Length: 314
Ligand code: SF4
Image 1 (cartoon, protein in one colour):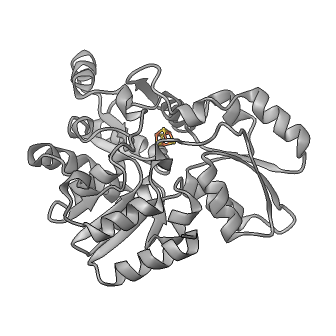
Image 2: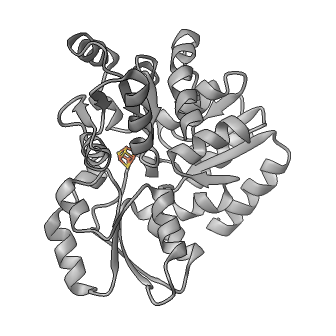
Image 3: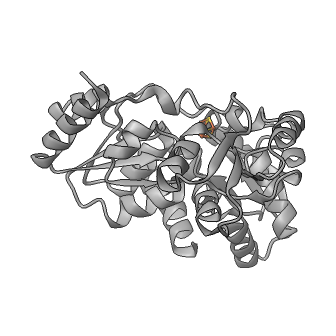
């Protein structure tokens, strides 16, 4: 069966189901094309809270994103097409580690990147995403009247936030990172810049500082998308320093530009574990509990506060 036929079957099946399909920008373009809503972590969290008014939500993203949707929608069924789609960055930080950091740093607020488990969020004062980390750290520092914040699990995002906000971030742990973004090197960027000297380099804050400093723009996936959208027409070549799914989105949305992936290593194999066949299976088996993400009530209750606080501050 062709991709187009499969997409049509999914859209037909969906007509008779009370379901919303959310997809992250790092999904394949075939999945992005059939989603009701597309976005980054922040955008999808807001949509999950405010617009997903259906009994079922299919979340084409990694596990922590589906957990966040479940926490925000405890009366709904949140399903993930492939339950092996996990984020290795989230595994860098456990709730026990957060408790230990809090003991050693009394009075400091805990800011956790949404790329963390529900149990870690439950130990936090507030969550953040790559879109709003700077604003969140500024606000929570003020609220706690603190000199620094505890920040995890991404040490590169913590470093970027500290660089922009000038507020000290104590990294939980020192070396948490995303394998997709952190493997992009200065050498990769120099090589691709030499090949395309007119192109603007736009990268994600999860990249290392040395790479960020070589770039023309640093931002979340939504902010990178907006940067391309709002660039004047004479700027029409872009080197994309994030997961390949965003580059595919840009080709669809702004097809007259030229795009180059900063490195061919920039593929998140965890995000790519979903496919159209799995989504079709879910639509035919919405009550298959094997695919439902349900955060235990006591954890969900405690994690809801930091997530809502982030959404209110955003
Ligand atoms: S791109 Fe990085 S942070 Fe995002 S899901 Fe993949 S491993 Fe996790």
